[in-house]
Length: 375
Image (spheres, helix red, strand yellow):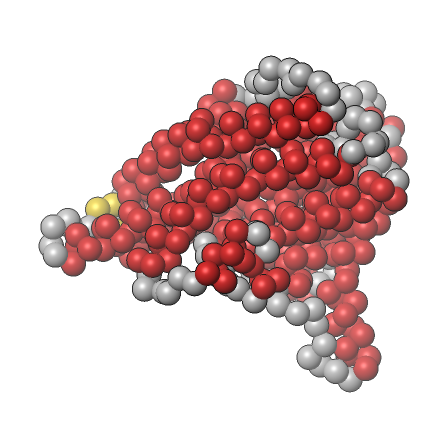
């Protein structure tokens, strides 16, 4: 059972997963769907307008920071081993199962599979081995693994329980891309920038460290119930929200002053994600059983929804090519795919993810000479 004080965080996981799933389903199923009722047009138009995919991912990152910074409990001796076992059992088994579906989708798309691709993907760090992502959503897992490594370093330096230092790390990561660009301008090297998706990676890691600082303040104030406004950490967190997304960016100023959204949705999606996270966790504390259930299986939802979506899309396209199936309304396709995804993920959590988490607890307890308690 999820501890009561964190059930509202699980419900927020469900919201984050829902916005990502909604975005991907709407984008992919639109071209095989017929027009639906006008009042349901928001199913297609709202995700890009509000950048819901980016919003959901950034909420996930904030939650990850919030949770992971408190994963180093227990005696200091063996803490690295305990952390790696718990997080490895939490992430990898379900991920490896999703790879099977991802490989099937990859082949259905006419792309060749190779052992280097599969081996690189299995590590969750494919780009480190020069390999593409087998499934598009896997890119966030690379950032997750890097964050774990940074957290281990911060723990051993004694920084992981210092909200001020965590906030400074978040701010440094967020401004690094702009610092590199500014240095390039001063040096006359216009192309100087972080490689690949470095800008996105730095902002994502910054949001995770902000989430870690948030957890420290959350605990200090009893879940923001004990005079939160008298705690300097609260104001530090509020300052960091606009600081991390940089309201001095020209695209943000165009959005605020002129209503022009070009190139601004990335930053605003991150801003709204952090603002909603803070409001939900500190004030709203929504604890609704259906949302909590979806939050518990949200990792599986994130991993398996592209597999279900692309298999459904492939089936629909094949049936429509043979005139076996007329185009249906987008809402119906999204509803059916959503129901199928929840069903698949409930099973994967029951038979893969949940047992793997329990295995990790038993493994850690055995190393400490203890008997793990019931979940």
